[in-house]
Amino acid sequence: MNRVTTVLPPGRGESSTSPAPRTYQVRTYGCQMNVHDSERLAGLLEAAGYRRAPEGADADVVVFNTCAVRENADNKLYGNLSHLAPRKQADPGMQIAVGGCLAQKDRESVLAKAPWVDVVFGTHNIGSLPALLERARHNRQAQVEIAESLREFPSALPAARESAYAAWVSISVGCNNTCTFCIVPSLRGREVDRPPADILAEVRSLVDQGVLEVTLLGQNVNAYGVSFGDDTPRDRGAFAALLRACGRIDGLERVRFTSPHPAEFTDDVIEAMAQTANVCPALHMPLQSGSDRVLREMRRSYRAEKYLGILDRVRQAMPHAAITTDIIVGFPGETEDDFAATLEVVRRARFSAAFTFQYSRRPGTPAADLVGQIPKDVVQERYQRLIDLQEAISLEGNTALIGSTVELLVATGEGRKDAATARMTGRARDGRLVHFAPGAGEVRPGDIVTTTITGAAPHHLIADAPLSSYRRTPAGDAAAAGRRPLTVGLGVPAVGAPPPEQESTTTGCAR
Image (tube, rainbow, N blue to C red; front, side):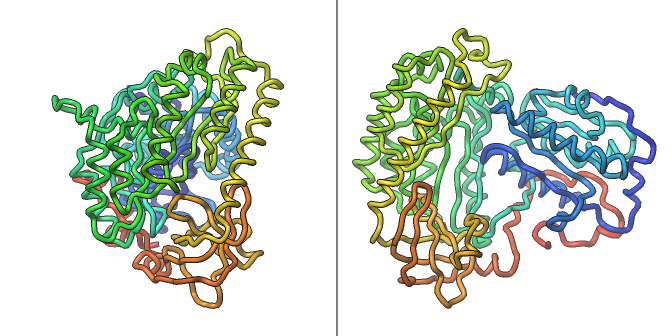
């Protein structure tokens, strides 16, 4: 699909002759994969001559990278588009682009609901954005381009990274599962895996630029090896081998991954986690429901006892592993007995944290047509019981850590009250959030500190003890200098038409 629709008002595009570089802002909704894709959108725009808009300033181009997993995603997008309508009317040269999962789902209807939008593009063709913006400006017509299959692996595109010390690395796109509540397969397509050599080359490039931590991304990472886009037979040991290969990269201190599917999680991955020093003792293992009947309706291809068995084997290999999960409350037909089964699994699993959701009916998914949709008040009451239980478990687990020593990778932007409390925030190796007292010395994001836990809450830990150690790192140097890793596109030509005065300007991390 490649369509041009909607004639735009005269005057659009005149600002392209301005001597000042055009600025952009990318607003990201949704999962880590969307954050990964937004870094690519930023990299593409910077390669095309755009510059990131200063914080709080109006941008010449606003890009919405959207999620469609939950109903409130629709409301959030169209609400924010409405807020931009008056500005668009006052400045016709300003441009608005909508991409990602919601654009893939809604397609031309985005323009029907918000005719002041300039560009609509899907999940499979994010590399088209700069060209579509230029075409909309030149033709004074909105551009809608929704590819039906993946055009280029997003990781092959240039990227402007958000962090100097941690990076998202995609290993696959799409999903071959058929979970009845999930809209992702219809929007991201079937799974396509990235060659291991390309993944490891990207990781080495990031480490060479100071990155200490990478998170491997995929809709189902432990299915990695199912399809490399050729006739190669499935390699069921590919993900475990990839983890071990990451362990051999000098300078890479932390490796994480998200999100595996319990149905395909195998013991070789557990062994690779336990035996590879830089793979963190943290596992995100989506449960969704503790009821076997509901799991069948969800087409999750595992049952509660199998799920709990995976957790037992993980903890045998890594006794201190922190395990998190996803849980959906109020799936169609869920009875009180079904929900009680979920609570029982939560009690037995002892998750360090849970990402909990009230079921959201998504048109186009099999679950949307199931009988027995649960009333909102019933879902809310069950949801609150789940929250209360999980928070009690999380608090108990965090309290048990008081007095223990933790190594923290100092983060930025994760402690909302840091300025008021004179603390900084970091992540422990198991992923827990720790607010700590930095003392009198200069501690920088990206550096490594060791400290002692002094307090606990359900969602974080406190470390007000003096630092046991402090290590300055290349990531800290980069963060202090305002440098972020630059990923250069792999053979992807520059797109768009930068103004002549920008042709010799440094791109990427020069901001």
